[in-house]
Image 1 (cartoon, rainbow, N blue to C red):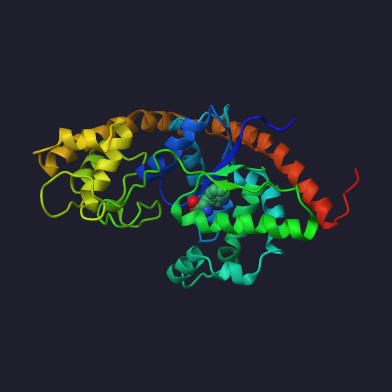
Image 2 (image 1 turned 180 degrees about the vertical axis):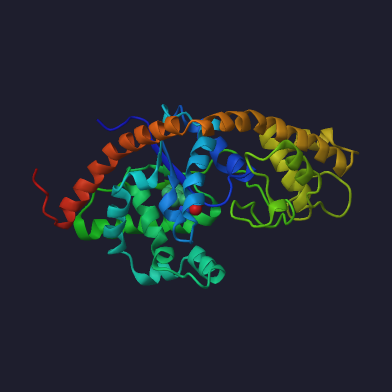
Length: 336
Ligand code: TRP
């Protein structure tokens, strides 16, 4: 029987450091969905390989991201949490989809253009076909809803186009058409030094982000030295005051207070006051996660077991879709 709850699926590419932006923009929202939806969250480790990775660092980072998901409150019983590479159906479906994807469509992808401009020495075919793997991630699980940031909307659109193409060739009803999930808060955390840009986990400039597992002293320092704007009024106005508005966004989500409340509380105060309070709020919000994280990372066997059970649960579902797709495209089923 299909699950009664709607299915939500999302993942993050395992590169860089999970940041306060990932927490506020993604993981914190995922956590709030875990009771009301059928949720799958995965570590997009294969997507990480589109950029050259040091193997030892990648392996460590996969454990680290997984432990951070758990430490931030994603429950491995309520959700299916797994590593993409543990469910080989992802790459298999991605091949079928790659064969349905026009080169021209991939050529139009903004992220491909940006990444190939950045990694000029490694413009590999994986970077180009990245969106077809992402489409496979989504379609394998018949996801209804996909929470994605602005930068991934185009990829989701391509995934939706692929459902259409697949249906034109092979008939309707095999793959669910996914919709973007727009969260309630929709908060987008910006870079601390350059608040016009999104806070990015692959930012090489340390001062631009706060990592989830960063030590309190360093968090404090970064927040206190965040870029602010001319004038001195504490007011939410992303156009005119991007720096202060970013600090207010973080504050508002972590404290559960509205902008109006915060503006009233800080009327007549200085940027410095806001920063001191915010630094403490961020440190105290992340402290329990950082402690849980340290414990989780000490026991790799436990992490391995949780990953294995997540993968097993995911695979049952992935297999079902892949089998139908292979059948539909005309492959001969392998007999036992
Ligand atoms: N491309 C996404 C990112 O970099 C990660 C991702 C891979 C993803 N597959 C996905 C997100 C499927 C949502 C659904 O953030």
